[in-house]
Amino acid sequence: MSSSSKPPPSKPLAISWVLATVSGYGIYGLQILLQYLKRGGQAKDFILTNAPSVTSLPPLAQRQVEPVFELAQKIHGFLKDNPSEILAFKHAVLHGCSSDFSGFAGQDRVWGEPNVACAAIEHLICTPHGRSIAKGYDLFIAISKWNADYLKSLDVGPVHLCYQGIDPTLFHPAPGAGFHRDRFVIFSGGKFEFRKGQDIVLAAFKIFRATYPEALLISCWQNLMKPDVAAFALAGHCDTVPDAAPDYGLQTTEWLLRQGLPPDSFIDLPFTHNLLMPTVLRECDMAVFPNRCEGGTNLVAMEAMACAVPTYVSYNTGQKDLVDLVGCGALRTQTAVKPSISMDTVADWGESSVDEVVAAMEYVYHNRQTAKADAATTAERMKEWNWGDLNEKLLRIVCE
Image (cartoon, rainbow, N blue to C red; front, top):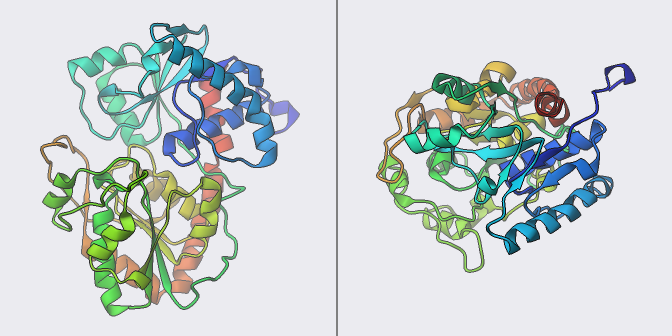
């Protein structure tokens, strides 16, 4: 950024959710912090009300954020030791905002002027209780057109569309290590839950592998919460879900074996730091995301696209923006999702066709050079979706 376009000094800012490097919201908050400091904001003016869960960062970035993290530990300790205290700031506070305007635990003890809801809404439901929560927010940040349109339809307050991004220093085209040159490698990422459609990936991969036994599935599906089996059973692709691991996470490897995949047909990754994901993605021939719903634009899919991996996403909810604005592969056959007792609000969600996912796999398999060339064009467009530029828009709204 040239000196002539240097932004005005940043007002103080606070975030009430946990910064981390293995979750969507965690990465989102971390990138907001980094852009705040890059634009000239002072570390003493950036407040985290939860202790971060960031295991490692590049050394120079770590040096920049360390004062913020040290203060966060003190604030977190204060709130823990004083459960009746409420923190009120005279500047903006960013809060998580999900379905029916629910947020993260404890964020109701932190308030600002203004209160900003950063929304990733998946279930289009607005109860009287949810609307009462919404009245506590002064403005809303939506991370997809689908979410922006929904929030505007509720007339709950000013809505700004500010997309999430990718880190171009990490996620960009580069040669892979070539560990599996004799395999056709398919990547599937996102925490294991009904919304992410891992059962659709599995069903399609089984069919594809029956014809192309050299196919290799790389899954990155870990989740701290065990999924609800009811919705999966209704969809009809599987009637079980991974068991909880003895320590934490899910036993996804054991589940894939029970589903009939041979041990040499897949690589099931553990919780993987975001810094290491580019080295995984560059080993893959394609990536598929038949997700039933995304409140945002799907960070993992965006990272695959930025690495020039031929990527297909379901054409529904927030992922539509990736197809319409960037031009990745689209799974356009979308049928209604069957609601379950525990998940009865699935309006606008989409059920991708297993046959269409298989067709996408076969297309890339038989047209690798064309698919790679198209993916390289997509990766070039993804440069405009970098965290710095996109979060600069957000910061100009809330900090100036």
